[in-house]
Length: 250
Image (cartoon, rainbow, N blue to C red; front, side):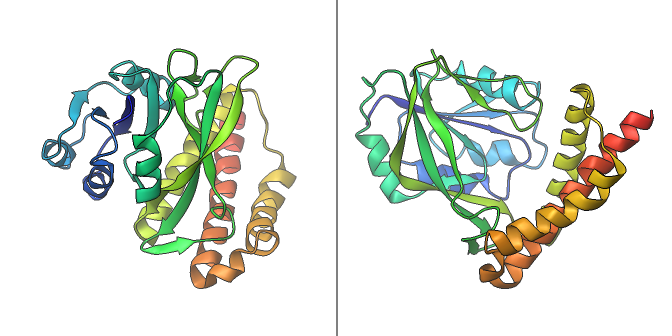
């Protein structure tokens, strides 16, 4: 195996963590699961796999991920969420990965699922993220939500074959709960950044989000699930700006 660590930050992911860890078997000899106080049996499931389980406090997405990366055995890290498995092609690519490359980060293609259906269009279609990097040079910023990786000038991004399989939402109840959570977090982040939510933004942005993802990004080709995803994004957009407006009013 190539000297690449796989690092997962999780909390209360008993429904999905086994599928993720099963997909990683044979991909690395160093898999780190950094748990932030699970109470649903997640840790018991993790202990059934040949991985290193650590418990740590939650300090926001970016900072917590950096803390977890510091526990990795190797400098090259594949950063995953608990609901992100990998396919066989990506596993093969990791097994022969050349860690001598410098000033490079790697962009991974995603296949996203709502329940068991892959969403090929709309907001989730063609999804990709930089997740494979050298932790000595690349770090997460300390944003509490929607964290991003940062690297020095001169770095280049390259694609790697294979896919991350993102089982993000189990059902409508799970989807709605997560959208509410992230909308509140983002509204609060915007407030700290000094942003405002005008009446027009609150009224028009949700409709534009639906139109963009359902029509312009061809979400309607995913059938009912495509419609649901576009509506949920519109709902999330409304809640985000409603929360920001509420905070601005004090």
